[in-house]
Length: 173
Image 1 (tube, rainbow, N blue to C red):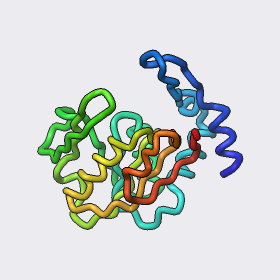
Image 2: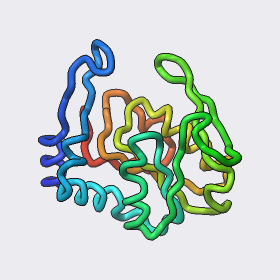
Image 3: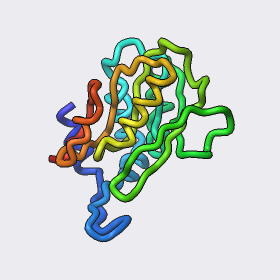
Image 4: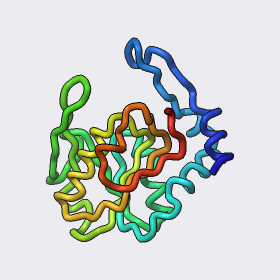
């Protein structure tokens, strides 16, 4: 993992003042364009979770990782989407963000009750979206086995809100 962590740190591009002044954005597109590195990331994010029935990817960059991780785990994939983006009946949760609120939804039949669920995304920041996803998983009767992230912004203490195992390949202190 040490080599992967170093390779990821070298590949992640810092973009100052995006999407607004004062934000240092972590651009992952160099990782996506390097198929060897991307495969290593997918393998590492999928490793050692045990039996998983479904992977839930959070909108939107969780969609870049979730299906590949699900394939590696022999699991299904379910997208957690912003309000109004899913075509079938949904379960929804509204949660607070630093700058307002948001609503996240899962199809009511995304997985059977009792399913073991892994939640994935590219980045853990404040933990609000991940905590909302956990609430959706639990409302649908799923058993959350944990969260798998590529990057964690440790200084925001997002993992403290999650109440389940959290694994990150790179932590920005």
